[in-house]
Image 1 (cartoon, one colour):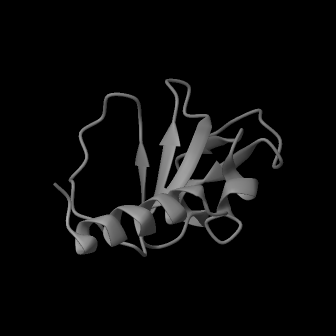
Image 2 (image 1 turned 45 degrees about the vertical axis):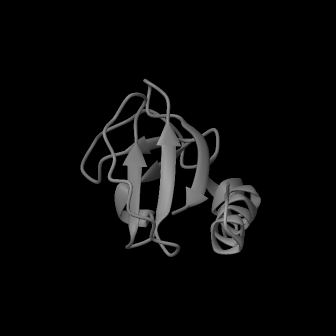
Image 3 (image 1 turned 135 degrees about the horizontal axis):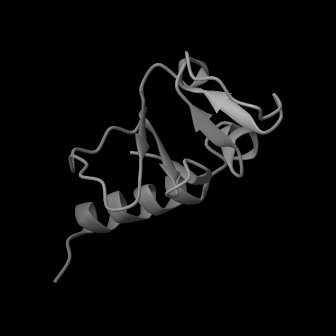
Length: 91
């Protein structure tokens, strides 16, 4: 049985997951994340450097281990095995 507080937390998390993430979803989804010093033949519209992500962010690869602490101001950037962004959410 859930509590009103638990329901509120779950609803808030779902709303944030579905939000635009302050425009980051449009900026990142479909682009490749590169290390700051990594060379690439990709154009500027096809990639994003890690230094250009928000200060409080983390890149999560498939099957990667991530802490379960909820940080509403942290941007989680989900990538596939090629480092192409598949989704973003706060948490």
